[in-house]
Image 1 (cartoon, each protein chain N blue to C red):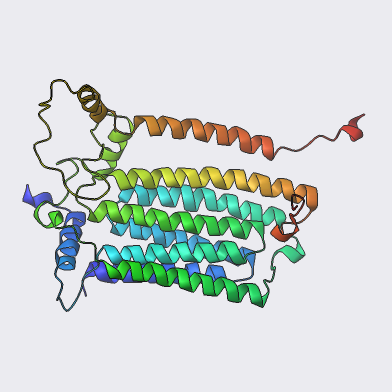
Image 2: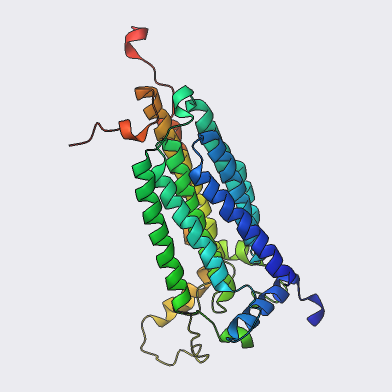
Length: 129
Length: 216
């Protein structure tokens, strides 16, 4: 059965083994590397949501935030041996939710554009007290 | 540098640079293009993590579906002044400061406590001996495979002697035994109904309105 150990298995064992040694000179890719990428995506999404004035730009920021969270899910599922596929299942659900959210948000944005002929989020102030 | 490290660094660099450029660009059409490359890079990360099905789904649903939807929204609303909407310098300064602080906090939190799972050294996860990850995923979504978490979120492996239900008076024991058979069938059904609701809702929200005054 050792013959059909795939690339995935090899990568997994190699990554986990060397990430456990503390004093190693050449650290291999571990969990923290992926979490850092996820954190960067999340922060980029938050900044994008805060700075974009176009409503669709805000929507793109939301997509970035969701992707950062998904990277974390899959990375934890890969590096934590007690999880089998839970992280991947959650990643799939996040992707489905993102698709649904994008559809609804775009419908709302198009409706707003039809009514106000603008997509500037600063001009949506009818509910301001 | 191993092949895995090289692939990871190149993919992560592509993803991060495209994400940062997407935030910095003023043009909404270019932002959509940068978002495309970012999502493709994230799917590459999924492939590197051994989640082939999630990576393929990311490419198909996200890059092929959601992003096309966003691009359609951009095209439908791209009227002169809305393509490039400038943000004031003060807002940029505040947002950049908050973003850098946030990222610094996350990075410090990552570096402070190295997360290492000792069990991984002895027993690497083998989700099914002969099954690939994709078939395990599909079977768990249909409730065939036992796929409930074996431990809490803490990541501590429970003792192996959990199987014999010693407590005969334990009421929850049969439910726990049944719960192992379910997998992710219920969330799958909920998501299916949710997608149907979203389909109807989006069609209702985006429909062409018939003006009453024009007809009558």
